[in-house]
Image (cartoon, rainbow, N blue to C red; front, top):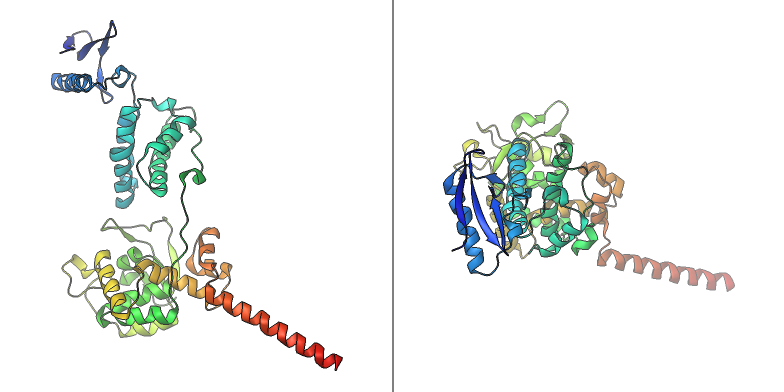
Length: 371
């Protein structure tokens, strides 16, 4: 087979010598690491020989300057891991190992060579939906931002615009308040409090599960949202990193006064659970919600049935403005709540009926006046 392994005493490292198209190449790195160990050199040689056998050999893949992107991505993730939530770390790791690393191994660009055309090629080659592609490129952009701030690259290249990913924005699915309440009332009474809290306070399930008794300020009658669960781990921050002050809804205040006392530090507890502190897990809440939906003949997921539905009810049933809803939800951007203002068929039908009524009344008044 082609190739041979040698040791350079002056550099105190191994190399693989490979002849390709009449030229000798000395390969000193494997996956961005110098060959300080013979076993690593043997592994590199085996990979090169396997590519040769499969007729997919490309010398650029193994050159010293083939790519520094993959090792940099991994070192970047390791260096910032303590600043990420468990869920974000898991998403970044998935993007790197399943998408970015394989692609840059096959397309050995250097970090400083990543430009708009490279990013477009990457976007088109990722075997995911539009939103999935976008998440992978978000990961790469975060890494390149870190590289730019570290002086590794002169600038962050422009990324493909969102419309190029072919993402189709789905309309919000929601249920009327009477149907929403019927679902919650179908849940066993011992587990209802956390669902009523989510309905009335427009927060994420991960925040409700992490809510502590100390997070309720009795004097101010407010909940302080400052922690959440991420990938089943309790973290001392919310998804956005902001602390939210949420007034206790009057209807929930009555329910809270009837909640049984527990020794757990958590506000909402599953007394049949085995977790420390008896806090809820997301999957358990989803199971309770889905069973209740089946019992009352509804088909809507928990997030849409609670937060999306409550927000949509405020605008479409109770007449709140978008600005008022934004104040309630504590969204930083107005655009984030516009999705809840979609006028539904029944609302349109009422408007049509009102127009017809006004037209009929105007016609009658005109006839009377002409009388």
